[in-house]
Amino acid sequence: MRPAPRRRPVALAALVAAAAMLSLPVAAATTTAASAATTGPGGTPVRTSSIPAACGMLDLEDDDAVVANAADTDDVFIGRVVELAPAGTPAEPIAHGVLVEDALTGDLRPGEPVRIIFTAAGAEPTQLRVNQTYLFFTRGEAGALQSDGCNGFASARLLDATRVEELREALAPVEEPPGVVLSEPEGGSDDPPELGRLLAPGAAITLIGVLGLVLISRVGRQRR
Image: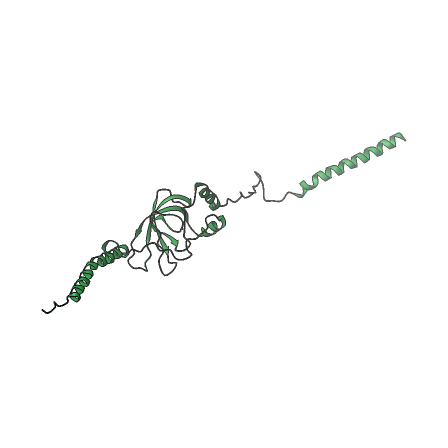
């Protein structure tokens, strides 16, 4: 009797094919998840947090550094990022929806919602983390605030109430002392005083002296 033919290669091929079919859903799911992480509703690109290197590193314990960074700004405030407006392309800036928590300078009020656009600081636009608190340095009106993409923000996570008040005092404008105001006397005149008025006291003293000498000389003659 002839031995039965070996079927191991066929069985092995079937196992390989089955494994490949099982791996397809996993790969598809991974691709879908990656796509969902980088796109928003309607397929609009949405990037994860992206902060250019060496940016947002302002030392909030250094009063001088904070004051210098606040120069030429309209508002300095603590705010929490509540939303990000999706960008149309990777090169476009992302609008940050921020809720003001405390204003150190400017006209913003706690609880006021604002939108911030960061100017380009590198190849990648600045994108902060949602639900994180930052100290912002901005220019413009509340509806369209602008901020430097590198130096216009710093994490406020470690700021306590005492340090916030210290920064508020450091950023307060220096009050200039009141100037001295010279006022004219009531009924005054721009004309210089008359010469006669200046000489009158001296003339009176001279006259008294002359009369005194005359009187003394007469008394002396009578005694002789």
